Image 1 (cartoon, rainbow, N blue to C red):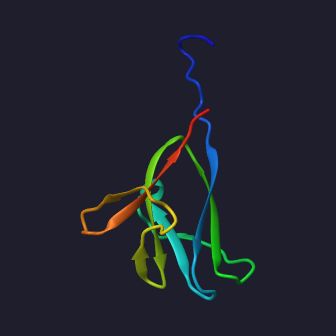
Image 2: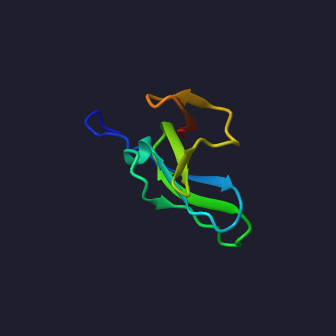
Length: 97
């Protein structure tokens, strides 16, 4: 590779899951999409296991779930940081190669 060439950042597939009662509306938002609640999670089996797949560059991301209009951190993820609203954001790290 020449010095002037930049190595492309390889994106990674990340699957997030939220478990609750079936029939909920679960939306994912975070630092990866400027906190815009637009990534609706699917419960394909109608068993309360809501999932979504993201393609993310390596790095650290904060996120939350919007469940029936109420913000919730990820109860399955022990990694979190306080936010400016007095609650907690979940944190995930996407590894590089």
